[in-house]
Length: 140
Image (tube, rainbow, N blue to C red; front, side, top):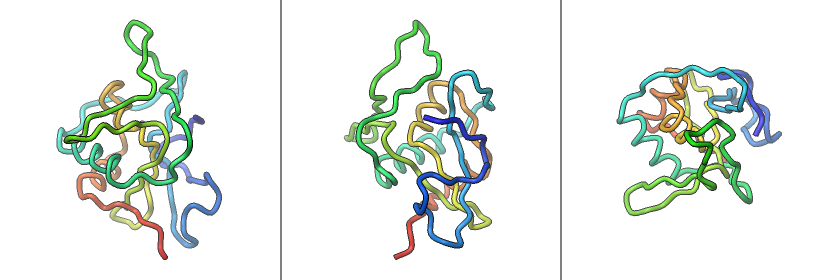
């Protein structure tokens, strides 16, 4: 996966965001790149897990491996989380939410793992939009 700074313009894949909608990147992390760390509300983690399970976008074949360092050097592949009765594999889709200003905030679904395993602290507007459950859905 490629690193994109938080809140930089989202542009991949071309045409995946409706015309006229501004979209920005959140949580596209890579080894060697610094990222903000801190605590998030437990309600955010729960809402993010539901979003990963219920509204994956831009699903791809296969899974992306988390490249960040893990204790003991071992990482799970693919990363799997338990959401209610469901096991959800991460690393093959995006999650998209709408900020209060109307722009889309787009993250790899591995963002859940980055938050819970690596203490990644997403931008406040992403946290708020996820907790408000404002999923971004393409216009038909």
